[in-house]
Every structure is written in structure tokens, then in C-alpha cells.
Length: 599
Image (cartoon, rainbow, N blue to C red; front, side, top):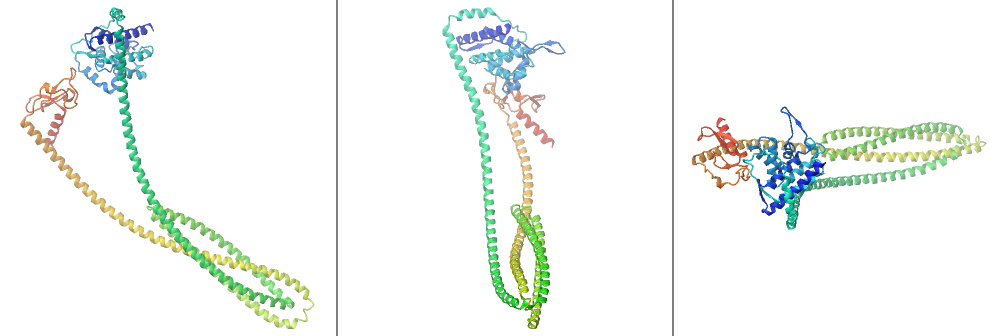
């Protein structure tokens, strides 16, 4: 803990002395300036504090350049510093590379930024430092805040010729004691330094704000792109809604037509039922007259009554059979209604999905066959009912004939049946009640018969509508086949045109390559201009300015000036017997020319 506090205090004093002395000199500092050398020495001690010992084949060693190498991975902007360090032939040890990194980062005024990135990733620093190290504690963040004030200094440092590997980092405390005594009297210099610190802090804030503004602009561009996509999707959705509305209107028109047809059929059925009711009433009146005559004549007809009772029993049996048949018919009608509902749903699905029309048409055909079978069965049942009514009429005629014979016998047997008049009246009352019940049942049966006829008419109308829809589907299928054939023809034409365009593109690319070769030959014949060193201030390819670490190099083919990275290739030229330095652009062009000549 004492070592950490001492290093922290020395760092504060060294930064303060360096800033004050630099302000007195006009903010520019050289590499031989003593306060700057002392600052680098203290900074090196702070970075070495708490370093882990690494074992290798040579032996154990400590190097503070190891954690500094993480900056290249975390911040790609610092790659220039590491490239410059690699290009320095005088530096051979890790300590020398670390010292060179400190010099170059101070020259770029980004020493505080790079160390802040390291402190933000303490999980990576823990591989190089002990838990009690200064860089892993709160003191590291304080040091980074103090280093922000050094951005106001212009450091003009020359690394060539300096022996950074063999320098001994010893802190001279006497230098700071003298500076402290001198600085006690200079209160104005402190005020100036505080003002400059505040100015530099404001500049740093502006730089961070500019970065945040750039990030926000990129986010705004992304949002604008997403909004454009959403608007396109909305337009497509609106088009779909319009098409669906048109389909909905068509369906409404079809439903209105079906309703009109059904209303017409209902009116026709009502008129038929009215006519049947009138005929039934007339027949009922005639039957009432006949029943009155029969009641008067049956007073002396005991034998005929017994025969009629037997016939009534037979009619009851027939009635029960008719009721069973009606129940079966009702079940069939319910099943038909269910099948009709299913068919309507299937027809709606056919209208919504055009791709599965063939399957739906087949299903509709099978359903129509079933309906036709059911209609045939209903017709057969109606024929049976009509035959049964004919049989009843024949029996009724036979009973009338028997009645006539009974009337003839009645005249003969009147005197015999006067005594039994009272008993027969009671029996006749019972028969009256039975006859009334039978009349009600006959009315109900006739009403049911009328309802069945109305349902048959409805089913016939539905069959006709389904047949019309099937014809429409067949026409749509033919139109779809025609469109499919047209699509195939258009696709063939497009494929042929694409092949022709590809062939034209190949011919154009070959002609372009030939033209470039001709241009290069003309340039070689005319001769390239050899640029002078004073005429170029930056690399022609990467546009980076030349400095002490980034030197100038001439391309032996085109004569322009490039940096080392953009002119690191070598090729043999006709004017030079040995391989010489060539820029990346000329290198690629010469290789293409060689490959085209070989082909």
C-alpha cells in the first residue's frame, strides 16, 4: 500500500511539474526535456507495479509491454503505433517497445484514451497483473484522469538514434523538491494551468460528443431504412385489402342472387300449399256430409262396425309405418343439411385458394353425386307414398260399396236393431272421437308432405347453382392453363436473353483488358514522370501523410511516391535486371498482364 501511494503522489507531482514547465516554454517539449524523462520513468514504474512473472525457456521475466499489446485488439486506431514500433530496427527488447509506445501515444495525444480502454477491460488485465496491482485499483482510474491534462502539450519526440532498450529508469526526487519550492511562489502559473486544464477537459468533452453524434446519425439512417421497408409493406397490405374487398363484394352479390331465388321458391311453395288447403277444405265438407249420413245409417249396423274397426286397426298399423318412414326421412334431411353446410364451407375455401381448385372441384363432384343419389331416393319414397294413398282410396271406395249394400240390408234390419239403439249411440260417440283424431293426423301428414316438397325444390335449386359454379371453375382452370403456358414462353425468352447478355459481358471484359494492356504499353513507351520528394506530402494510395516513421518510397514502374505498406511488393521489370520495388496497383496490373499473356 505504501508503494502504491508513493507512486500515486509522484505521478501527480510529475504531471503537475511537466504541465507548468511546458506552459512556460510555449507548450512544446523535446525528448531531452528532464521533466518529460522523469514522467516516462514514473509511468514505467506504475505500469510495472504488480506485474506477474512469466516463465519461458530462457527464464523468468517481467514486461509491461504485454498488457499494452491488448490496446491493438481493443482499439484498431492504435495499429499505426505498433507498425511504427516494428519498423524501428534499434529496438529489440520488450522494455524498449513499451517505452516507444509511451512516446508515440503521447505524441498522438491519446495516452489517456488507450489506458482508459485497458482499465475498462480489467478481466483481460488480470492475466498480466496481480490483484493488488496499481492498474487494477482505483489509482489506475485517477492516473487516467490526470493524463488527460497532458493533451495540451505538443511533444516533438524523435525515436531514431535513441537507445530505449538500455535506459535505466531512476526517479530523481531532488528535481521535484526544487520545483516545489519554486512553484510555491508562482500562484499565477497555477491559475493558468487550471484554466488550460479546464479548456482541455472541454475539448475532450466535445470530442466525445462528436463521437456520440456520429453514432446517433448511423442509428437514424438505420431507422430510416426500416421505415422505408415498413412503408413498402403497408402499400402491399393495402393492395391485398383492396383485392379482398373486391372478392367480398362479389360474394355479397352472389349471396343476394341466392336469396332472391330462395324467396321466389318459397312464394311458389306457399301458393301451392294454399291451393291444397282449399281442395282439402272442400273434400272435408263432403266428408262431413258423408259422415252425418253414415251416423244416421250405422245405428243398426253392428256387423259393419266390427268390419270397420278391423279396417281402422289396419290403418293404425299403416300409420305407424308411415311415422317410422317420416322419422327416417327427417334423419336423412338433417344429414343432407349437414352435408350442405360442409359443401358451402368447401366452396368458400375454393374461392379463397386458387391453387387447390382441382381438388376442390373433384370433392364438389363427389358431393353432387351423393346429392343426386339422395334426390333419387327421395323420389322413390314419394312414389311409394303416392301408391299407398292410391291403395287407401281404393279401400275407401270398397267401403262405400259395402255401405251401399249395408243400406239395402239396413232397410230390412231396422226393426231388429231398435232395441240396441242406446248402446250403439255410446259406441258411435267413441267412434266420433277416433274419427276426429284421425282427421287431425291426416292434416299433419299433408302439411309434412308440403314441407317435403318445398325442401325438394330447394335442393333442386342448390344443385343447379352448384352446376353453374362447376362450369365457372372449369373456365377458370382453362384460363389458368393458358396463363401458365404464356409464363413458360416468357421464361424461355428471358433465359435466352440472359445467355446473350452473359456472352456480350464476356466479350466486353476481354476487350476492356485488351484496351488496358494497350494503354499501359503506350504509357511505358511515352515514359512515366519521376516525382520528386518535395512534390509528395502523403501516400498516393492510402493518403496518409509522411513522417519520420512513415518514409517515402518510389514505385519503379509508375514513378509515384508511396509508403512502405503500399509499396512492399517486388517484381522484375524490363528496364531493371533484378526485382525492384513496385506499388500495389502496378503489381496487380503486371500480374494480370502476365496471366492474360499466358492464357
